[in-house]
Every structure is written in structure tokens, then in C-alpha cells.
Length: 402
Image (tube, rainbow, N blue to C red):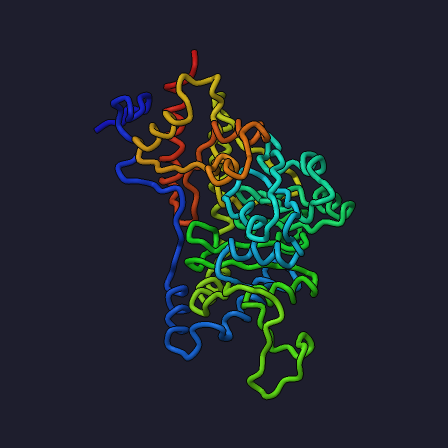
């Protein structure tokens, strides 16, 4: 059957694809499988040698001095806030365009999240808005590297230094990106990673915190594992045997298993090829969508050599006869399965009950109304990429306002 390229499937045309393309998917090869099986055949399933091996690997990949692997990206954010000294009555500045964990980590510590608006072109937190949000209660800034593009780290670090704050970089999207030639993970006071399945590198789940500060590192180790230590220099009592340990802080069971660590180590070996493929897909999308008047391509700061975790398509509503919801539905009819990242955090009922109201971050709120996350992952073929471009182009042209 001849494809009707001028008519979207939702209007009776032929879909761009006969099978579905999902917005994200992990890539697992035989080396990954063997790495996990090898752990299963040996003694240590958790608290074993693979944890230290993973932490050393993360330091080698990023250039950070210290890494603490943990059970999830959310756990990483929580212990980073604890290590930063965030507590009851403090404030933590973050962006609303993120997964809820970027703000929830402050709530876990008894602090109040303060939302600063985004740059309308890059979609990352705007340092000018951060500076305006600083008060005497501010303890830390959680800056999200949204889509994998680095936040403007130098201006943020300058603000934090001026006010005695800790910069926690939520790098759930950013592994593989460089800021001014330095790998993200080695620049901020602390950087957190996530190894969820749709991320560039996966462990099924898992997370990590990277830092160059030995004091923060020691705190992170404590908070990851119940606040318990066998380090005699941290103990208050004389050990009464080789079995002795002490709980010196209120920590959590945020340990990662050797099974997950082995998978992440194997995945990190493939980071260069993951990075290059994601960059190639991004470049092809930018080339195609940059020519369509009703679409806006996310801008990048020159300091960021970006490995995209997400590709955000932004529609310009005044140039279309349909809204984002209808555009989303039209893509689904083409068998292009998309998502939306993210609903502004303070839109959620839990945050409404805490007193947050719409209107506080107008750039973020406008962005939310206009964005769709397109498929991007290592295993996408060139044909997959062209099918996505065909679907988007067909819809944008058909519904263009004359």
C-alpha cells in the first residue's frame, strides 16, 4: 500500500510505522548478561567487591575523586541532601521541570523546596532566578541537568559560593555529558546519577553520588548504610572485638547489590558508543525539526557537550490548529509512542496541600503545555529515526495554521 505522507493516520492516512517505536529502551548485550551471571555464581550478592569496583569505575569515567553507589537516583538525592546538612526549617532551591525526587529529597529532610523558574530556551534552571530565590534559610541548590544538557554550573557555583550553599547537581540525565571539557560528575559539590532502565546506562535500578570533597564523601557512606561504621576514627567507644561496629548517625538502607553493580560496570564500558549514537540521533532530529516553523528545537549552551537522555519536541501552538494533546495522540496513531517530561512538580496534589500554587514559574508552566518527549535510545535504527521524523513532519505540516 502506498503511504499517504500528506495525511496523518489519525485523519485516515497510513501510519509512518507498522510497529511501535517506544520513547526509551535499555540496551543489554551478552557482556551484560555474563557480568550478572558471574556475580550469581559467586559468594557475594551484595556488600561485595563489585560495589567498590563500580565506584572506582565511576571516578575513572567522570574524574571525580569519590563515588558512593546506592539503590536509586532518589536515594542518591536524599543522602546528598543529608550530607549537605539540609534539615528542619531549611530551604532547597530546585526546578519544577523534573521528576518529583528532585524536590522530594528536601522534604525527606524536613526542608522546604523552593522552585526557581527555567530558562525558556534551554529549559534548565535559570541562575538569575536561583539568585533571586536565595534567603537566609537556603541550604542547598538542586540543579537538574534536564534532558542531559548540563545546567549552567559556573554561575550556579558562584551563587552557592557567595551565599555559603552546597550545589547538588541532579545528574540523572547527564552521564556522558561534559561541561567545559570536564565530565559532569566532577564539577559540582555533589552530583547524583540514576541507573533506571530508560537512562543512558542502566543497572535495572541504582544510583550514585560523586564528589571531590572527602568530608561529604564520609557522610555519604554513613547515610547510605544505616549510619553504621566500622571506622574506629568515627567511633565514640573502644571496640570490644573485631566484630564491633557503631551507629553514629541516623542513616538508611540505601545499599546497591553486586548484581546491579556488575551490570552498571558492564554498561559503562559501552558509554562511548551510547553517547555517540544519542548525539547522532539528536543531530538528525535537530536538522529535520529546525526547518519546521511550528516546532521549536531546544537550545544548548556552548559549555555543554551534551549526551541526550531525552529529546524534547516543543510545539508552537499559535502556528498550529491543534494543541499538544492532539499532537501527542496523532503521533500515537503513527505508532510513535511518546511521553511528556515533566509535569511541574508543584502541580501535584501533595504539593498543593503544602500550599504551592500555579503561577510561580511561568516559563516552566508554558513549557509543560507545549512539550512531547520523542523516542531516543541507543538501539534505534536509522529507519526508526526517519519514521519518527516522517510522523512529526506529517502532523506538523497537515495541521499548520494557514
